Each structure stands twice: as C-alpha cells, then as structure tokens.
Length: 385
Image 1 (cartoon, rainbow, N blue to C red):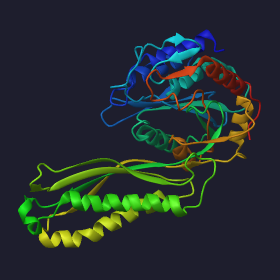
Image 2: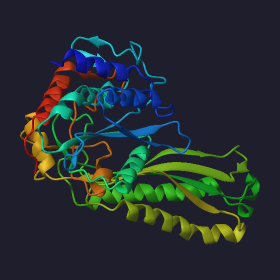
Image 3: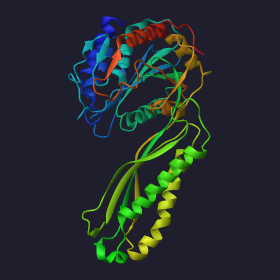
Image 4: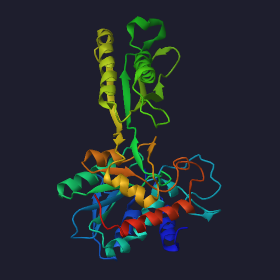
C-alpha cells in the first residue's frame, strides 16, 4: 500500500483544477516551491501568454546526466459526465483514489515528488530529472518547448520514463495521433441553379470519402504490428459542419479527421495523400469560381513511439516494477517526442487507461503502492546501462 506522505501529495495535485483550458500554474508553482525547500532549482518554460508552464528539475546536481521521470499536469474536462462525487475531491474509498487526473496522471507525479528527498540522498551514479508538462491532452504542445529548452541548455538525459497508466507494465510502443481540420470554400447559389455553384459539402464529402478509402486500405493490406488491439493504422473523421438551408447550395464546409499510425507507418505520407487529392479537385471548382478551394490546419501531431525490450531503460523499468514482460498501449503519450530527441524512453506508470477520462476516474492504492516501490528502487539503483 502507498505511504501517507505519497498519497497526500497525490491527493493535493488531484484537487487542483488543471483542465487543459485552464492554467496549470497553481500546480507548477506548488511543485517548484516544494522542491525549493529541498534546495532544488526548477527550470520553467512557458506558453506564449505565460498562463501555463513546464517544469524541469534535476535532483542530484553534479552527477553525470540522469533519468527523466515525465508526466503531464493537464487533465481532460468532465463536463456532461455522470460523476457520483466531486471530480476534484481526491476521495479515497474502497481501496481507490478517485478524481480527475488520479490515473492520468497526477498520482504518478505526486509519488515521484514525494521521493525527491530520497533521490537527492541517493548513491546512484545518475541524477533524477523531473519533467512535468502542460497541454499534453490537447496535442503534446508543452513538452515540445521543454525538450527544446533541454537542447538549448545542453542537458542530455540518459533515459526517460513516462508515467502514463500502464498498470506498471513497461510499454515499448504506441501509435501516433495526427489530427487535421479541412475547410472548404465553395460558391453559394439557389439550389435550382446548381451548375452556377460549387457545393462545399459535396467537395468536402469527396475528401472524407478518400480518408475512408485510406482507412479501408490500411485494414486490408497494411503489414500487421501484433500486440496492438488494432494491429494496423486507422483513419477516421470526427466532426463535419456545413450548410445553412435546404435550398441554398452551401458555400462553406468544415471537417476534422485523424490518423493513428503504427510506429512502422508514415503519417506524413498519409496526410500528403489527402492534400494531393484535395488539390486535384480544385481546378474544376475554380473553373466556376476562382476563390474556391481547400485549406488545411494541423490540430496536433503526436508521433508514434517505438522503444525496445532490450533498451537499458526498459530493463530498468522491468526490474523496478517486478514485471518480466512488456506491453504496447493504444493511446498516445509524450514518449515519441522524447525518443525522437535521442532519449531512450519507456512508458510505465500506475493505473489503467480504462479508468482515465471516465466518470469517477480512479487509480487503485495497490497500483500506487507498486509505483512507490518503483521510486524507492530507482533511488537505490547502483548502476544504469
């Protein structure tokens, strides 16, 4: 079971409202001040309007490099969900810690923070770094700034452990998440005069159909990556808007779509195919009205992640978690960004993604106890590599 100090810190973080649309500075400043009392300085990197920040801190200054413990501080909202308790209550009941972010992933951050003094006193030959980011849930935006800051400061961590909920089983791969918005500008007309118009909905529908064709192609012929629930890349349209009346040919339409690519696939090539198809439709549209066409906006680009069971950080996570195997996860994380920055990475944290983002989100105290043992083991590790 988890110790009282670690549980108290986890509860404190859960009680802070850091839904992605809000600031996370209350939580970041709390962590900064907690570490400052131990003599640890924190590096903060902010978003453009200074309402959100990442925090990076090194416990074990002077040691050669270190291992990152990574977590995101934002949560998804709970609007419209049927909670039986206050989502910010951090209630402990029936062997579980409840609350938004309890599983995803404030409990991991709280437990890591509760072991800061042990990491400082550790005889391990490496430092431990805390890397806590903003806006992971809406596109992994904050961690990109954090990683850029590390590069600029010539900080070169040895490895990274991302504490997303994997039931404490080290995860060595996940798909990427690439989301885009397509806006179509047509030319309106009375619906009795369709040859004089460009129907934005119909043009958008053609591109939507191409996205669907691509999805069927992935399912039909893409080489399988066994271990994923869906062992091929996927594509889907999540939103579609357009039109103002039944008898008006619509001038505007908009839709949003995503690709979830295997680590062995090429998401940029997928998006290029959509763009090329849309551009092929424009000459006929512009014959009717030159101002018509397609525009695209990137919503988020979260790269896939592919580690290895043979990586030293994976072996370390197995040793510390007591797990002999590894797993793959279906959800996106910041792991691919750390890996692409040249930092060997594994995903391993308490709780299950099945409880995350749900009403009455929770993480079991048993899982938190395992995570605490993981931290204690990391503090007593004598060698890495």
